Image (tube, rainbow, N blue to C red; front, side, top):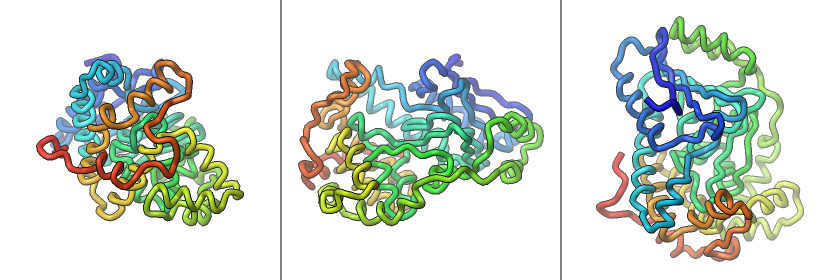
Length: 345
């Protein structure tokens, strides 16, 4: 097994520890396959009463997916590797979401993108003082994926649209409010809780350890977010933002959205709406895959990675210049069925 991930059975728990602290525990293709294999093995293993997922290092549970190889292969005109990565990752995400035993995740530091797919589909999702959860994919020319569109759709009101297109980071209270997490437990008590879970298999110990989180901000912004992000399309949202133009929520949202791919944001809104209509992880992942499978060849993904990771100039040249530029046809072309290449969960 790779040193990047440590998978074992301890006591009554199946344990998965992400172990790439120097890379903020970014998840690789091999790590995705290893997690899936563990879930398959433990489903029918009576020794495993619950699954416990954590990560090493102080800065992150998992800050996203390892996208360097996707960029390299995509720039070479090979789009098959990225499609295979996403298809296999999404299959793992679905198994995590549907796992028949309790899954307890300890989400310290950054939990973003691919990390959400590992950490936020559990049944007992724990945050602490340092937790920062976000779906920042639109900033690199992708969409909230790994089942993230379903999580966003389940957030109160129009928070899903807001979080998806702004990539706003959620502290512990906001993550719980938006239903990306369940429990606030101070990090200095985590080891004791882990020891109890391993020894007893009693997932109700998580409930007993939980405390009230520090105050968040999203609950105070809810009314403004519902008003500004209630449109059916990105163009509608842009119109509402421009007509407001003065509120703090509006100004902050427009500043964050200005960094992101307009095509990705337009498709993200549509994905959240589709997920809200049909509350099903397989359906959400299938729709997400329609975008990601096309993202290198027809979207902004390679340019987004170039600007953010390769050249680091933070000056991407997106296919569309502004929020009102992506048309309904552009969105439809990215999200239409893939025929024989459709994702099968």
